[in-house]
Image (cartoon, rainbow, N blue to C red; front, side):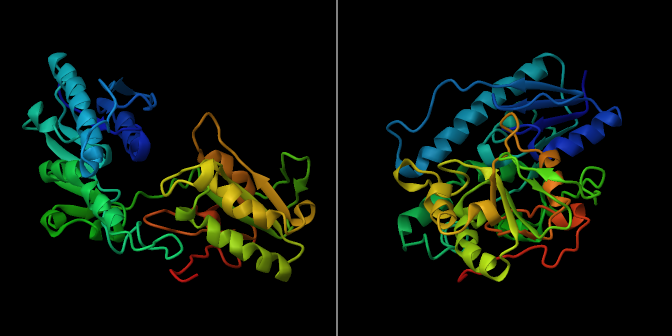
Amino acid sequence: MSGGALFVHNNFPGQFRDLSSALVRRGVPCMAIGSESAVEWPGVRLVRYRLPRGSGRDVYELAIRAEADLLRARSALTVAQWFKDQGHTPDVIIGHPGWGETALLKHVFPDVKQVLFSEFYYHGRNSDIDFDPQFWRGDESSLIKGIAKNAVMAMSLAEANEIVAPTHFQASLLPPAFGDRARVIHEGVDVDAIRPAPPKPFPLPDGRVLQPGSPVVTYINNQMEPLRGLHIFARALPGLLAHAAEAQVLIIGAEKPRGYGLTAPDGRTWKEVFLDPVLESVDPAGCICWGTWNIGGCWTHCCCRPPTSITATHLCFRGRSSRPWPAAATSSAPIRRPYATPSRTA
């Protein structure tokens, strides 16, 4: 069987969830290549690759990421060759180049067009490394490492027929050499899943129940870390509660030592570093609610809809290319200030 689409994503379906589902509904044959963390998806034939070994041993510091990406690229090539040997040659390859898997696919499918998703082309200065003065100490080596992370991704993008970025910001990060092939196509909002919902009482793990109409403030992120503004949020909490003592602040997120940004010091989590000291200085029984929702290791929109249906204010701190949770689309309560985005000096 030839034709159809071959999706390539380390954590398939990732950003291709809705697109792959739409193609399946239209009867388009769909295949996928992913790592061992990739998830089976209805109607898509997924084959996971396995790495032959780990990376980072006796490797030049600036080449560590490139080695890891090339290991993934070579493993993905093996799966692509298996698909071809089985008689499956796609009409188009739709891939995420961020982990390297797409870099060598032209060797197997030289005539198949590639559409690659540009989530984040790394930079040294004026990007995710040095944007926050609280953590940036002028370490030039960190900037150079950031640039070097692009090595294999640039290989992939060089082979792309089209490059799709979800925002103008993400497209602007691409080098000029790739600009003529870049298109900005927003990922969209699933209005069936994310829409205004009737407010309902929301039970908390400690037995308390948040009632519709109460002054609820929500802060939701898949991981609690400085890259998503946890430290700024923590500094703002005492002032917020001083002005609105009746507020119920609901914090939802995974507690880990590291997310997408820096690793927390001394083996602690970023919640322990920034949020716990603040929680000790306020009355948790009266106004702070801490919650961690993590279903089967994966974050889902459905787990965040109930609290946002009763929120009065949702805080979103955006670092790098983070996308805000659309609380305004899910809440039936009056939104006084749906998003609060910190400046670099906040």
